[in-house]
View 1 (tube, rainbow, N blue to C red):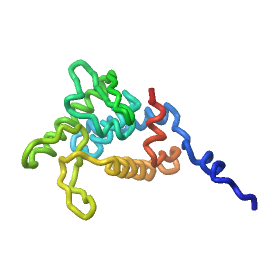
View 2: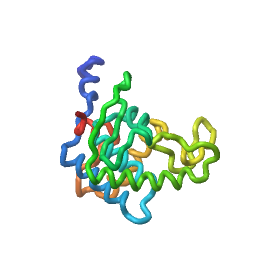
View 3: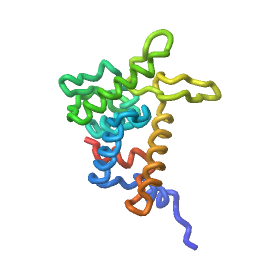
View 4: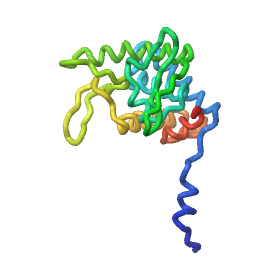
Length: 184
């Protein structure tokens, strides 16, 4: 048996292959349609916002987590996102579908924040149900963490892969493989 070097192993794993543009757009259509349905789960609406903003800006999770309400201008169809570790602000145009999903999310977000005491967070992306952070229960309506987005994406992928098993290729469990299709 041939021994492989660490470099050869890493080349096989990173970067992981991206999905096709058609596949990424299918994901966006699935989430955006589900988000606009009556009775849509808040997690679905939030994930549609994440995909819509990534589609418009190519932003990674970090940039999306830093996005605030004041960074949105839905009337003009713009969002400003701070990209990278140097937090370079860039303005991105939003299509009508993304604006509709964002407007829906703002209504859902308002309901999530209704029970909070004190000031409402300025972060765009919030937790949608009670979660646990190092053994401490965290209420819904607080800024979500990167790990929260990772788990939300994986839940969507596992449900979708189960629903379409045998009829379409499985979706990647890492959002980065979809985001890079839209990276500007």
